[in-house]
Length: 433
Ligand SMILES: Cc1ncc(COP(=O)(O)O)c(C=O)c1O
Image (tube, rainbow, N blue to C red):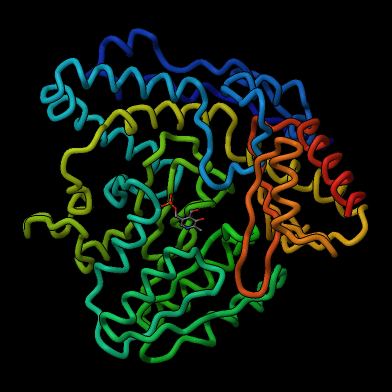
């Protein structure tokens, strides 16, 4: 145990009251008070494996009683307080839709953006609310002035629908896609930097970098991203980071990555309502990107030009305040450490079984919550299906490049005894091989 002590402040304070001013019914309830860590001191090395503490965190979620959820990477469950807030705001909107939805609640968006910007390490006027990472990424990709022959550097390990977007663009605008193929896993910074930067040419217009991949949980470390982005900037190449899986999962500040744009979903690791995300776009790049939904010319320099979504429910934005406050009650340092601890816990134990192959790094720098494995002599689909149908353990599979396996992703409400259950199930599956 090291002797670093951390004091967990109640950082919610007036912010929540302020953001809910328009909704007196809810502001009466006051800010969310953490049932677990608030006001205590914590020690990272101790609390990361303090199952009593994480049991309290678990109590904040409505966890399935029948199925063990080990696919939190796809979309995360919301803490009860977030779901309740969303329901209450939906009811509030429905009382007087055109007054509450169209007049009162839009005023709160700026507070939400400020809270997100504080976490992301950017300015609120560089941040646009989006429905998800897909919308944020396609806003950037489709909003450029592409010329035939322009080149984009991207990786075979980028997300499937993101790749599809670029492939469509290649057909439509005759741009050239230049593919990076990284080792699986990759555990060497110089290899990553070289893989991307060696592909830059005078025709390269954009580079796409996935901060943390969905396939294996591979992380491109923050300082490696910064090195690539700086090299790209020196060649006038636009840098777009897909952070769908990284935000609220691992610690970073977007400003330290030196990218032009950063896209994320908030319904993954932030546990916000489904259909929430944001786009960060560096202030000096706003004017050069066309929005997906048209905006007036006077707004050309303003980030709000990307928020012309038409009428949408703002209940999810209001409930996102609660997700952010919940996130702060744990803090990114402890959350990241716990997620990595859980992944290392099951990977180390499973490594004892014969014929296990991992595609995820066991080095902390290159992975956090997500892990991918396969078992020699058993088809990965059979392993995934057995876990689910015989042992009620929800999981998913990854199939990319020449690799296929079973993906496991716990969350802050996962207990080590849940992972023991999965490990026991794996022993039975391997025994029956
Ligand atoms: C790396 C990555 N990028 C983008 C996305 C798209 O996210 P969303 O479906 O929330 O838009 C995902 C979804 O899993 C992803 O894993």
